[in-house]
Length: 551
Image 1 (cartoon, rainbow, N blue to C red):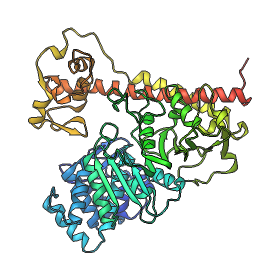
Image 2: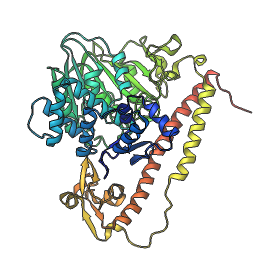
Image 3: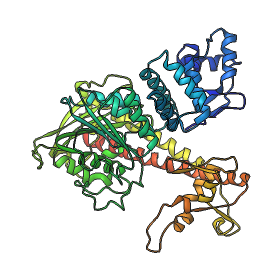
């Protein structure tokens, strides 16, 4: 996420916050930036998410007679950003604790006083929801997957089944509870959740308390490795799981009973989350999973997809419009599963409803037109690919195969050309490995206050240390070998790892190279996604007659 700390001249604000200050839309602020040469220049942030000095913005707004007094809510948010920086979840939890009358882990006195003052004129629910919306807006702008986007929540709510009074809803990757608490509603619903980040789970629980949701219980911990709800059988499981995570615990969980559809490969962490969610349903229980589009056709997941189809578990797949999810460049799907009542295999005459909304706008209707729906027989899905991409099963006349093929090919070519410029210029080194020289342990750096942790990820907490340099050396093969036992077992003991001692100038030089390598690696993942989509469009376009080879 971007740097939320205050600048030397005062707090920084985003474009969205300037819009709130001036009482205009974000588009109006963007127009001001282009039209007025004296609009304040960015004072921080990144190129695609700049931050501006609040004092400069206020002076400019006053000069243009577009300003108004800074609201108490904006002042509270700015004070929180100055106090908590990138750890805004901790700040939100502290503020929520004040609103429920808690005393432990309270915020700084200035923030607590502002909260109590606001609570005299605004309801606690309104205040905490307003702060939550600000946090979600910040996550959206930075492309973070820390919270489910409002569009994803809206889509899950739209496709969720009607639940009986007193039903149980479970989210095993609940984060701050946005999807769990907002995605499904009903009379007397019991909500259960778990999240790896303890601060997120705590805030979600406090927010539920403020919202007067009495039947909410949330736990902190790794859902896959340490399930806090082993005996829970929910009526509905909703989940927007972490995408693209390969270190989800496969080696430790090879014989886990949850893999009744097949053991997921290391690259198919999303299918591990899906089976974990399915394991928490009883007969008739349902699952709504948000999935990257590539999970529908990747070769490594074919066996598990085949079992989902063969047993009649997958009932509907919805391809949502691009832009629905903040953290995925390509369209995402909602997989709708239902555990059969009898527990046995399904009737081969059953169908899977395929809904393709990818041609719609991200804020368009979620009600499909007739040409966006296809009911596909199970037997027709069980081919060599078991492709669950909705667009693949709609009639060729409803898809612009030539347009899709040309657009995907152009995007793939552009990405490959871009990757050629991303890799850093590296030359032959003239010495032994840096790790064979003077080093420092991460545990010593942590004790000295130079290293902090963003979840499980070590980050710099000092101007003496560069984060990219730190993480780059820790991810290198040399560090991996040092974290591997004689039996070959990998132990990700970050605090026990060591990094070379360098000046900050050398750190930044190496950090820049490591950052470029990571960007290249991320780009290659996108190339893989695009390649799969391009092959799918080409294959089905040729088979349907919508595409033909050139002479």
